[in-house]
Picture 1 (cartoon, rainbow, N blue to C red):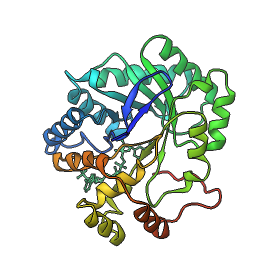
Picture 2: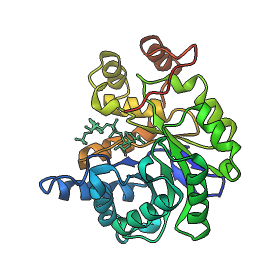
Picture 3: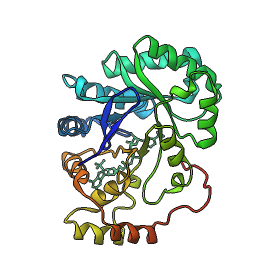
Picture 4: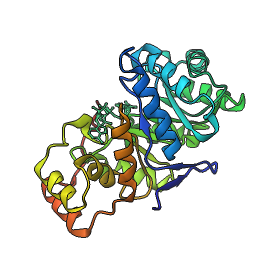
Length: 278
Ligand SMILES: NC(=O)c1ccc[n+]([C@@H]2O[C@H](COP(=O)([O-])OP(=O)(O)OC[C@H]3O[C@@H](n4cnc5c(N)ncnc54)[C@H](OP(=O)(O)O)[C@@H]3O)[C@@H](O)[C@H]2O)c1
């Protein structure tokens, strides 16, 4: 298993982490969600992705509880809403996230998507938060090549450490230019909705390949996302069964033939595609 990504500051993560959108919203499922996140961390799925937006802070509160006593084992990612991403707004939002997460630093703080505030202001705030030790690294989400170039042209913008975007078998557009761009700049693509929110899991080909590997369609879909270096997948699992299953995708190696079959049904892009978002 060689699924480690090393950030430019030396921090290392497993290329399979845990998403948390729609978690922490219900008292009925809360205990199972907490147990799931903790088991995921203990398995080594150290990237935990949350955002101030998710459930208006409820996801961050849940994550805060899940990482209690395990903070040093976690690579914690949160995001500022574009409407808050002014220089002061970003810093204020970060403080609030830190409180909800019950920690004094984030490993990675992302601008969730492009909004009305100039990138310069957000970058300035990120650099200040970094200097204050409140975030280790900063990055962006839902940004295409054009926006990445704009970020990199801002003084300090070239320290952007990650781009989190939609990527799975049915959303391959970024293979054309954004993945190569990120690779060239040595930053990871954090692939969100890696199993297309569950919608691809009954696909016939995935089921067939899964059977050959004694695996499940979710495991095949995840093994495909993380098949190349530089991509970190963050599936959301709300049950212990799902997180344990997802963890095992780290040990699946798809054959050349599997990849060819998948390419036939889920074709690679041959031209620039607009960046998709969910
Ligand atoms: N930056 C952004 O703009 C952005 C946008 C979207 C998502 N995200 C992040 O990416 C994370 C993942 O994306 P997502 O939540 O949209 O979709 P996803 O991870 O592709 O799919 C989650 C769905 O798949 C199911 N699932 C997970 N593992 C499974 C398994 N082994 N077998 C069967 N079903 C399984 C989950 O069920 P259960 O819940 O029942 O386990 C859930 O219904 C989010 O949680 C969030 O942290 C970021």
